[in-house]
Image 1 (cartoon, rainbow, N blue to C red):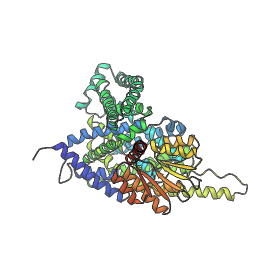
Image 2 (cartoon, rainbow, N blue to C red):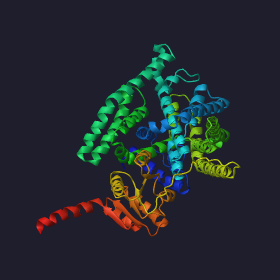
Image 3 (cartoon, helix red, strand yellow):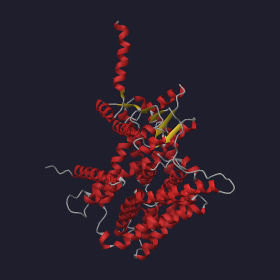
Image 4 (cartoon, one colour):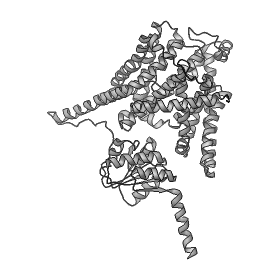
Length: 570
């Protein structure tokens, strides 16, 4: 038998992640929980198969690069600018509060200042993946509170990026660090020869500024131009390869030539690529690979977790969980209220922050590599992450219930007031008022053309799209749009499926389209549903799901070609 540790590690990671991810989803937990548990099962602290930890770390590094590349691709200045007055000061204050709470627990455990600082910082940032999923499930992304929550997370992400840049320098000056760490040798050399912290920080920030300058000056001209040339070739394969080459290549070049982290390089690459008109296509084409390596990242993080910490140190685990779910959320609630924002917004922000995720893992892993934290800190962060993510659906459900009660009470108080006054605008999920309209799912190349043609014919149309920027673009031209995934019943109801005359599904994913058809057919058995497909198998699947007609591009092209030939043969 061949010795193939790489294949064995990837195979075991994907198989266990799939099984446990499905189980987590069935139990109404985010799949991330399943991926982390899969890592525990293939890790060195549990019996049975043990994956190659060193290979897993390198695979995880690719996962970090692609994760950060995706963050850059979806980074929105506009979303942050719209809520800057609350998101920026609120997030900074909340990060400071959570970090201090983490440092307090670290002090009680006898850790040095450096360990407490990194530990607290890791507890201060929530998972964007978990947040977006929770908001989408409840149709809250497209609300005032949802916009604030997303802007808040953007600020947290930016703060963590700065932390990743500065941590190697701080490793040499914070008390309690063992300077023998080989990974910090370069930073130590810069500190000793440069005469202290200020010069070391200046050198680090200078490298980051130089990298950012080269990336924005050169990249903004070269990358969109290169992508346009590749897109002109007409090869999906080459286009996807070009996007990956840009993301991973820029990340590697950043590390080699400017000595900044892979994560920061990938983030800048994504930000530059976002400015291209082909950014949506780039995001769609690379999403499967980004998802796959993100799974490997979470599995590799799970491999680091020693579950015995739950038995040997239950009180520190509970204290960590308390900081994440209660302490951090309470701080966020008070901060939002201090800025005179409504209680319903404060509740949603509190629920959004009651978990930790991918940035916490990246930060804690880097802290270990620089000998900043004890291994127990890593176990507490991972244990707190798993437990908080598992609890987050319940926390969100409670917050949503309290928000609904609060909004209802405000409406009733306004209606019953002795002097009539305007009721506060409800911060509820958006719904359309159109009737006898056509619902178009997906606003890509096909959906956009369909929606435009319907508008020209003065047919009322409602677009359902999962990309916030596309939804805003649709609304800016005066059309109705619902943000969300049409596999969810609440999204279809918000689009007015009970009153629609037809449903057109223009998404390119045949499996996803089949799920949309099945849900729509359950809600409206009499509705005419038309979908698109690429393969014969997709046509059969979507038809079996309940579509009245499935249009496959290749078949229609063949029919048109034969129609052009007919006059010549007559």
